[in-house]
Image (tube, rainbow, N blue to C red; front, side):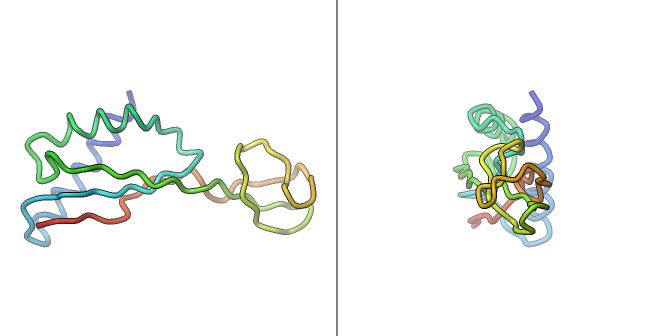
Length: 113
């Protein structure tokens, strides 16, 4: 389950930030997750609860924010939103698209005390 290792990375960031900024508890952690990131949200939520035990984020509420997939269309030279990596361009119907966003996952912010 790669969601477990993702949460271990998140835990490391949380602990580093707690040391750097002097907070003891994370109440809410917001993650931005791209449509193509390959993250299974139920598995991530489960892993988050398990991995955060004993950390400043133990008991924190995890909020996941969906980010759309975006691609550059080489046929119409527009950046467009796409549902799936292999979709045609929704503007011109062209098939020459290069994904430019949607595979990211990052901490957007944390509510801390």
